[in-house]
Length: 368
Image (spheres, rainbow, N blue to C red):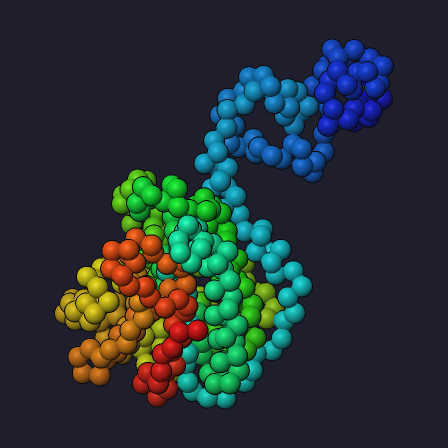
């Protein structure tokens, strides 16, 4: 319990200022602060968690009221903030749970949030704010389409590269407008916006994620930290699943990822078996069918699928592969690539690819 002097201490003031205000010496204030009963809820003392303090000296006031110098790890603080999803809890405040519609068709639809590369900036189409605006527009257009088509099942997929990251090319140090933790927080809140908008409109919603090159956790340029499972996109999928578990209004929402150590996720949609893969393991948009044929012989996940959905090349395309199989390459919502446009003279249409499957056949794909 605090004494009479402690009760009068204003932690926002210096020791000298407190001494002058109370009528005691600075040394007295310093002595009382050593035993000051400080509420842990005061934000002044939660700026630097004690778990990331590596050493102490003089200069910063700590939770016990004393002034000390601390050496702390900014990267540890950033990771701590990125892995905490209190922001998702706040984003769900005010959400009104409604019963999803009953099934009206057997059709399936897929909305592909491909290559968002949140954090990528200083391109001809802008940066993160412009990417977010494009994504929200795609979510809204898809919501209207879903209400018209009334599919039984909708897959909202992160097809990889959901964040820009920092370990792909050195230029990212100057072209990113968000650091990696902020990229993660922004990307997962954006996906949550899509889930909140679309979940009340369909009997079944699947949120699917696959690993990718930009999403991978790395320790240096093009140097993976671990296996393919060490991926920020997959982690966002896990976090959203945790936050929405047992929450009213989301009981019909499921989360899908590849099996451990695999890079392809599978889902049944509209009577077809659909394989999702980022696409970075092939040599181009129209080389995806060749890659698919190779994994067919190796019987890797997706070898027996009816439809292969890919991304990575930021270009939309649909073509047949083999006997009736279909490859769908997805468009991107990112702000473009000045480097690519300057070298090739080309640019892809911006947006998200949405497709419909009925009776096992792809009916259409379009960009929204």
